[in-house]
Length: 62
Length: 471
Image (spheres, rainbow over the protein chains, first blue to last red):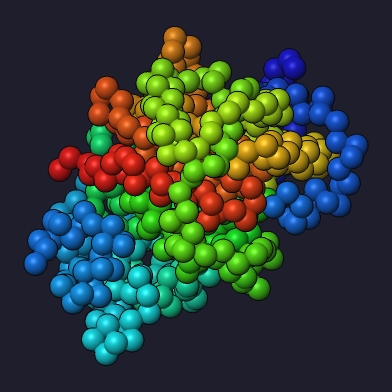
């Protein structure tokens, strides 16, 4: 996943209600880029046999 | 007559025996621990708030019960520490944060209430990473708890104060919470025995949440026996916790004597060994040899889904942390530890679709780990793949490879948060530099007593857990 564009990221952060100076946003941009890249392997996991209702209830899996 | 120093080095079981024999009073025991804490602070950063008056009041009540033959059990008159994200009525609960520094709850957390009802003596609220959101033990507001095995090295977190406190002799047992390893990591780095129970077994009512799908409460102790004593009190239903599911009744202390003869211990082939300090690997192999000598069979198991561990934990924990702490971060982000702030903010960028997908994958992962138990009774891994890292660095070198410290600390404990299974950290030796090493045992859901039984058998054959940190 390519690193997030600075202006696009600032707009996205603003839409999420994050108000911060440029320095904080730049560190956050790198951190969010790394986090989202790290989550990409999840897209390859097949979950067709796990009903959403079961997954979002705290019962199954325990 | 035991000296104060001997008392502060005792296990809960040892203190209970001394109290029952009237060799020492609960007030004398409490005074010994309070004096030890006084000598350690303020430099050790074990406590955020100490409660000596409450402790002595509880100790006097315990002595009255013991004196009249009405002792409530092994915890009656025994001091304990409370991680400062758990409520103790009338005492501030900071959650390791400046923002919550003035919050004073009007009731006890469910787990704390059970300990108090059993007669245990609260000596204080222990240090924690801000909102329990980091495994290192760093706290920008209250300082970092000192690891008595290696000042200058991390105590582990987020239950850093309890870990350092039990290891330093400020308390014989204490509470931690565990979302990605926050009981087991400080236990491993501070040479303790720490249990993350089955999800839902111990009440989370009155505990500041981090990740509602994964948060658990449990003890950091000096032995598996002490953890069993704690669990006999802690396990059970609490209607105040929506996730409370106690499962079948377990006799934790009674199950300790069964040994491990005939049990099969599975060691995962995949994932676990990709980041591993050779000293930790050697200590793990030695521990497995001990289990073989005790009559267990150690076999390899395959769980390819362990490769999902990191992404799943990050997706669920950061998204749920944003659900809880997002409003505070938006309103007063500058008052957070900035690393914690960014971690919470990162969770805001995870879409609902991706979060839901991660939750479904968590169930698939749990099924895979549970399926591995079809052929074994326990799973075993090192608890943490490295001895305690030095403070002040975000990366470390493990067997020639640079690894982020946080990822190194979390990668093995997270397995049993995502799968919600009980897992026990056990002292298992020392590195060349004198820092503790640890192995982790896990059982199927609601077989917490079995994992404690195996831990107790190991501790009957070894003395790693009985070593105390240098003065």
